[in-house]
Image 1 (cartoon, rainbow over the protein chains, first blue to last red):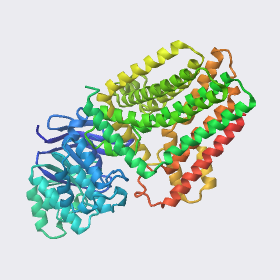
Image 2: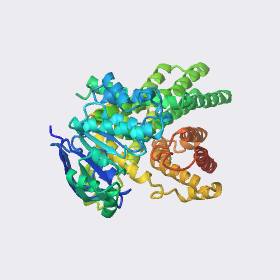
Image 3: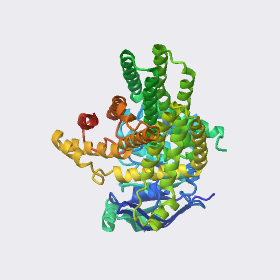
Length: 238
Length: 382
């Protein structure tokens, strides 16, 4: 099965408010894409729709050859999703979360869990309940849950926000490894500094639609202009 | 395929984890309400015994109590199936509709089990005090009540979810009936309310030895259950998804659906802090949309009156007013007390800068307001 994401004329509305308006986008298998934009631009709604959690009003989303509406389980098996703040069972431990998600994905592997916890720097917290975790630790647990099993597409909604520098490095390295393994990454973020180290493509959303979509080459050119060039460029777009 | 072991195992695992989460959150608190109800029932039975009432009258009252208890349990089905705290977590996972259905059913079965305790002890006490000769029949009735509540309520919730998610129904409402924005969630109110009212009516008829009702009840519940199980594999995920996204859309913004005028008035009188009032408004909105108690209690009472008219005693409801008021008050108090301890589902407290004590204060005000309203309703009925 191919994991190319093909979105055509997507429209998502909450009551009268349009979150995503006539958006079309193709993300190839193995591509790593950063999705940036102001709050309320429609980034979270787009990610939730791709992962099959909300149903669009019109338009189509096809992942490979299936749609999230027709085959939600198939899509969710291939997609690792993490939102901000991650929705967790407040009174279950970190390890219990990983075990549950691993079992549900049908690929529970103790070694993978331990590796993930070590890579993300939360192994020592494995027996702590979610409610005892700080914001950054919860983010890392959310990320770990999205990586459990054999996921092919990672949809991360502001997962890197709010992490301390060490945790940020852990998370970025982990995601870098996942991208090198051929996974598709769609990362919604507000952190523009160093985004080029993880993503090959940058998409800017505003008011429910794409206002800029640049390739790795163009991204490198902007970054080369100076430390704040990417921020200046982004502000020009929105 | 529907009864595949793997499905049941996964559903059981999801249920076990969510139960573990709930039990760690409030160890034993959820059971207290059932023991309080048992105590209330015992006091009422002893009162009737001291008054020298006939065993048949007492058994009728016990039947009404039990039927209302099972109706209360059935009312919880939507929370078990769609509005559980972990709905957002589950929707991210590759969980099929059959898993969601079974998990909801396990949750409901656990509630029904606890509801059965006061009913069981009640009939045993009646047998002990009056020497009831039909204990086996009444125990059978409890078994039937358990089975029929679990099967019927879970089936009805699955069917309501399927109707919410059904494009055909939505097109029909839009094109044939001309409703531009169909009130999807109405299915979640109407169908469970009918199912709950039917539980009460069924118990009344069965206590009157209408044998046909036994057959219809068992057959109907099983038929609905099999249909729901079949539909759940295809419709349950989209149903849950629809309901969760409508919840996210409507309840995340309390200003979209405000409280009623009477609730606003109470909030103005009793709460001065605007952030606390925000929480009060949210609770009022959630409670009205989710726990449509008045709707089903009203339907139940209406059906009791219809039953009374059909079977020659139109004022049966009034004869049993003490019991009904007790049930109303008991049901609501249990519901509201558990509400205090329920963490906010849709809007995490970390999103809103309101400290925990203010949230508890707002919740208390809400409960007191409801209790006052209930008391006034009770006075009007008497």
